[in-house]
Image 1 (cartoon, rainbow, N blue to C red):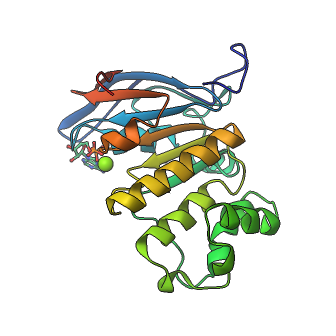
Image 2 (image 1 turned 90 degrees about the vertical axis):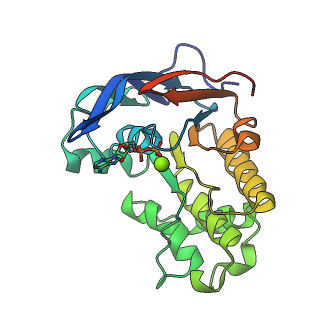
Length: 228
Ligand SMILES: Nc1ncnc2c1ncn2[C@@H]1O[C@H](COP(=O)(O)OP(=O)(O)O)[C@@H](O)[C@H]1O
Ligand SMILES: [Mg+2]
């Protein structure tokens, strides 16, 4: 499913990414493309490099070789600071542990990426909280929310700036089955409605089955997953 024409640049493009750490090569040439409005799942065994890949795609780390492009702009060659500036507003991140700021209210947490991108974001935060079913919780501190509610706040926050790219690293990994399905459905529905390209790391086959395509990372290489 794509919301863009085949000729517009991919929301996210990786070419031949190679990366490793002292003593271990993790990625041996990973290429992938996510189009606007498309949801792609990435599965793979623990330690196969899924988080490493997501960090490279999100510009949180620089690949040893290869290219990363966001909406037609190459970003792996930028300085860390320049890339952080590009990321603000263009890339939304959701992690397994949602890293909410405990001293800010729920609404302020959702607003933070917009403020960092130089937008106000208050009305958008309000709208997103309503869409994840937390309209009444904006003034609460995160500490009083359940795990599933906190993850829904993290999903809203990732979409605060209407990013072209959403990267999610096992966003439902700490939730029970019912909440995991609910949060995954919310993330995917919202991102599709907004035309974001989504890359979602998951080891949950039911979550992966909700994606338009599933890729499997094994031995540092990526292939189309079968059987989903
Ligand atoms: N910052 C790091 N320093 C050294 N080794 C790392 C670092 N991050 C990940 N690794 C190693 O890279 C491999 C892949 O890790 P990771 O990307 O976290 O896998 P996954 O998310 O698929 O479980 C593992 O062997 C891990 O120990
Ligand atoms: Mg991981």
